[in-house]
Length: 185
Image (cartoon, rainbow, N blue to C red; front, top):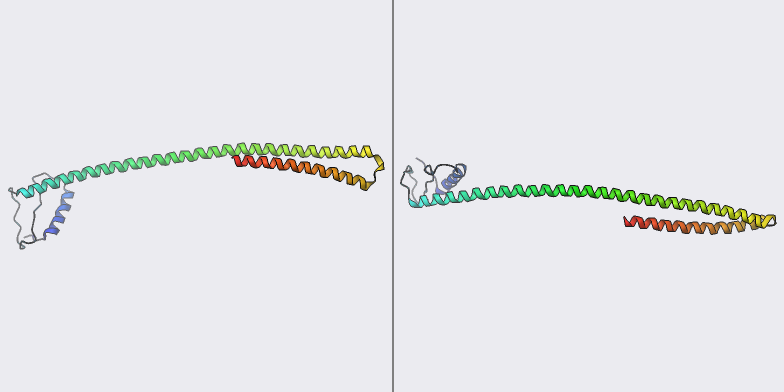
């Protein structure tokens, strides 16, 4: 004798039907029990079932088919979404690689330009130093020995200061050009 409330029985049957979806149509185990009926021994299932039970079975079968189709569709969509995620990650990785290569190329180009500017600056310093030396020698020849040591130092200091200003102006121009190149990067 089996006695259970209808709600517990329906839950168990729904669980069993989910597990056994592929059963044959004639092997249905669903028996409807009303809570209003007194608890008694359940009748054995017979071949003659009510049309309501048959209709409920058909609706259940249709619902299960829809559920199966929905699950398959959901799984396909999940696979497609994952595939797109992987493609996006790969594209992002390739983009990062390309950016790294471009940055390295820009850095090399910038380093070459800075090096060139530094070489020009050094050449200008050497030229200014040589010019200062030439001017000092020329001044000494023109003035001869008549200039006193202090006067000679003053003249040389003025010439030297003039040369320093010129070198400093050139250095500032080169620094500005270097900064502009860095900003262009």
